[in-house]
Every structure is written in structure tokens, then in C-alpha cells.
Image 1 (tube, rainbow, N blue to C red):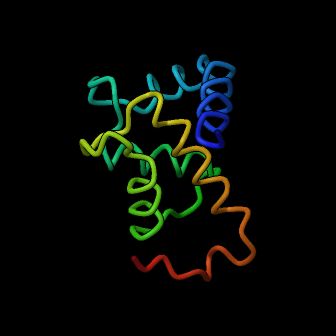
Image 2: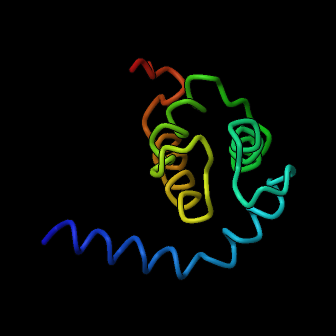
Length: 102
């Protein structure tokens, strides 16, 4: 039951943010593939951080958590997950001091 509720909540949020996600994908998909590569995701995360630094460990964490299809790309529906993972990470106390060891 929780899985269904989570899926419905995720889909509802995705629909509400679809216009923003579409615009963000178009802006950062410089290779015009319809998805974000690891490097393009790094640029997107820097944008979300007002130009702040994104470490390789942080990028790896967001990519790993967001690449639901596990195809090495972040597609538009996965972009919502990336956005959520990144903002949740930034909101953690002393997230810059956290170890992102896997």
C-alpha cells in the first residue's frame, strides 16, 4: 500500500513540475539526446546550487540514486528524482562534511 501511495505522490509531483523539468532538460541537454549525461547532470546540479561546487562523490550519489532505468542517462522523469535527491542532500546538516562512501 505504501508503494502505491508513494508512486501516486511521485507521479502527481512529476505532473505538477513537468513544465519546469522539460525546460531544465532542454537547457542542460547540450548533446540533444533527450536525457542528461553525467557531465550534463553536473552542470544542472551546479545551476541548482547557484554555481557552487559539485564534487565527484556528490555527482555519483545523485546519479546512482536517480538513474532508475540504469542506462547511464537521466531521463526527464528521473530528473525529478535527481532534483529531490540533490535538495535533500543540501538540506542535511553539514552536508559538505558528509562522507558519500558507497
